[in-house]
Image (cartoon, rainbow over all chains, first blue to last red; front, side, top):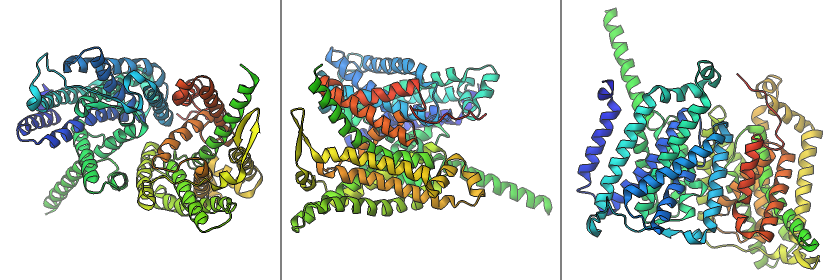
Length: 328
Length: 300
């Protein structure tokens, strides 16, 4: 029953309802920002789960790109329904994470990060060479159907947006519950001291493997949403290493305190990127990098830490007041 | 396989290896001493390439002799090493040495983004060409094929740099101090070594090497936006293969990658783009510490 009194769960639910209502008033370009936020947010949730275990991946564009290219490949063989595409993208990315996980679960720290990057660069090299997938030019993604129904050009984005927010909501709630479960709580134990975890009878490698698969699934789903949103996939914008860097950027920006913070982080990132590109196209990377530096310097635990700090201060004030009144 | 192809692969491979070594050695020096995986390195490379190409272009227009190009390469690398090295180390890394290593990597990634745009602001988006030093040295014919002499001098330069670094590290006072700092930062601090200064000097040397890589390549590449992004992952691959922080490792890593890429280009061009990362993944699978990194005791 405690699950029903969970603040994060209610926060996410309110967010879902708000986004659903907002959908009726949004302009087309806002919807695109929203969809990209959800897509990158999903990947960042996966990275958050890994981060809690003390692992950072500089190569999650591997699964992101795998999900996105699965959409392209399935469309070539004639699959056009978003539900099937989503299942396909998640499944292939998950399988890849499952297989690679046997290897990667043995690595920690910078080696984990770089081995991930190596794999994503292998995929990049392969995709840049495969002619049938457009090599470096990429390949277009056609409009999808929803359970066989084609909503028509005017309503297409509207319907896809609903699909995306519901999907992101379900994933975020599931990730939140997972992090509160015993297996999810073990992430922190693994980060603090793996040997103690082993002595307590858990396998830290298995724990890491399961987290790796979950992060792969989420990144695959993010890739599917991104591919359908943009309507085009190409190696440079889906699999190249700076794409992975952006995901880590969002994780840092949001902090690892809470799943819902990740979406806020992703939104801030998306707005920064869009507006920097809009108003200062020559220096948009400078603005992005500069804000990342500011976050690292002054908000080491991300945006979420503003809230915890505020609560901490309030508690401190209350304690001081209580002390003062007892002294009187 | 015929003999000629073998020669071509070998020479092409060595040229490419020296290219990789020049880029990777600065990265490995910085990682070895400061334990910082410096993504900004890609921007140092790009800065070196741009400044050199720009100055060589100016010199050519001003009617200077073409041989001045080599002086320009050296001077701009030293200049950038000092300026960028001090800015990044004193202005950024100084605050982050006690933070999580992933955070430090990300901070250098952020600095990389900033510097990339700084380059665009200074030099714009048009490509620069600085072929004068290349044209000056001419070509020579080996096994019926024509190679640029300039590219061949790169091989020599790599060996010179490798030797200087080895000598500096093993046969000089500063090298001894550096080894002490690498081995144990706190104890060397207690022994009266000024670790802050050692870090700054090492970082300047690393930056200089990165800028020199770019500066020396400027005549043989088209200097345009995006060269830094490409170079940094290549340098990572070389450093990981050789063992992070090991200078002989960087040399061997560069040779392994260089030769296998040349072999791929000449025999199986389809795999060229990912052969390097496949080797990197393979090495990490079997020797996660890299081919040459010292074995470390596990801390509990």
